[in-house]
Image (cartoon, rainbow, N blue to C red; front, top):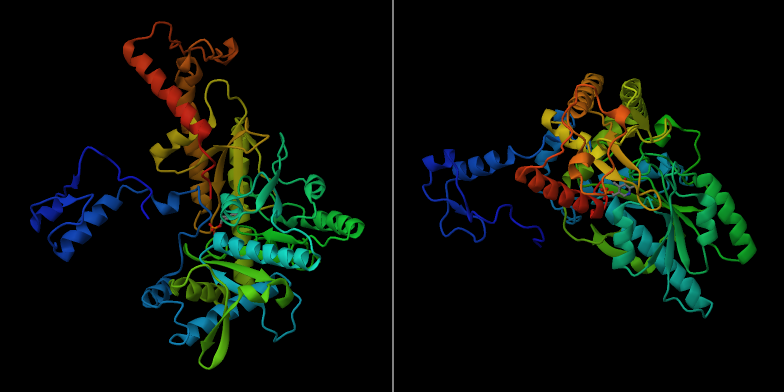
Length: 504
Ligand SMILES: *Cc1c(COP(=O)(O)O)cnc(C)c1O
């Protein structure tokens, strides 16, 4: 499915300098070419065009792993031609996924005996994991309502407005109403009290986030559990909790082992985690774990005969690669608890270095918490002349990809920049980034305010004191070019304001 457009409409073919050694005609962009081209030419054309993509290691927007050890890269390449779904043919790969499920379930304190198999499955990412968990809740609730002779056509789910977009997808695709607890200034996660107030008889579950995408903050699962238990007792319902631990599932067990957010909390029936975030595997793997067999309705599980034994499966798609499963198993046994703990502690320390560096400029207010996913989310103290989107844009000049976004309702007026600290983001890079941010601020200070240029009648001129002495650039008479720029900026602002948060 191609929903995105090919870049420039003006040119229907791709011309390549090096490839002209092998081919003289350009490659069409809309139709398959008539003729084959040499493999070297194909490689060169694609490789050259990809040079213009950002550098994944400098992509500080993403939680997703961008570096693994060469030994693991080798395992990945040697399994690249294995279809995971061929369980009969690749029984060892299936066994490795089952071991991963067991290890992760134990990490999340599932109530299991020492050699008891856990209930869970490897997925393409947390999004698929969340679809599966959501379906299990929906089916369980429907079964319960039917048994009581009650209508079951209006299921809902309660979350914070800070949920990742995959919950909105789940809600729309599987026809469940999403009831979102609004955020407020200075409080950017779901308020457990308000969430429990919103729960009704049609609520299939309350979804708490361990590591909000927006500022890394952990939601209070324990408090949610206590409030919901009271409500369940009063009403006779049994509304459960799901924990979306996409980013925090591999952080909390190592950095905050005392924090009760997982299956130690009684109402938590399922948990998802992204293997490709702090599970430390390249993009393409997630996990969902259920507390017990009873929490996964049997009618959702398909049974595949696997070497004469029964292999239950519950996924949305059929074929997929095996490499990520193998890579996850590599990380779990290679690093062990000790290795993961070291890496997460290191990430946390680098986050602190970055946070302190930003605070010491005196120009930023940090909106992420010290306890949470290792990331730094920060806003400008003074936004009267330039905003976070400009800082993000200017940082691109140095190669850094730092996203800026606005918070969801009712905190839309808050704009933030976010830097995710991954394993491969070293202390040197953290220090370098602070220096480059300082340069960006210096450059921005020397420029006229974008709000002044945006002018019109609505733009508010900056306070006199905020205009630097040497800045005589206040635009009074506008040339045509400036007017055009104004229009372009106004559109850009409009588009940004209407864009959904693209953070992942
Ligand atoms: C990243 C993320 C997701 C989506 O996970 P994928 O693994 O990218 O599919 C869902 N929820 C939260 C809280 C996330 O951070």
